[in-house]
Image (spheres, rainbow, N blue to C red):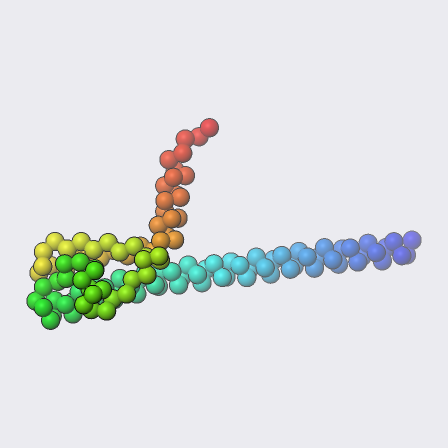
Length: 123
């Protein structure tokens, strides 16, 4: 009987260890995903501000804002990782600062999934 009680205590110990291990793994994964999301947002903002600075530099040197992002890439050293970011550049006139929007590809996918889920009819 004592041996049965000892083996039951061992099983409880193993189960408790597995539960604690699962909680630690969950907290770790949550932290990694949180840091990844923050880095993505910072990368988006860094790229947007770099494009804006290059636009202002172009305006100071040439007297006009650049006609496109491609022009900034070719002449002002802007590098865009098109696998990670979509850049929308809308210039109204050569003397008005263009509207610059940078969207992370992963963020765009999440927004698309949210929109698709909202549009699905209930069965």
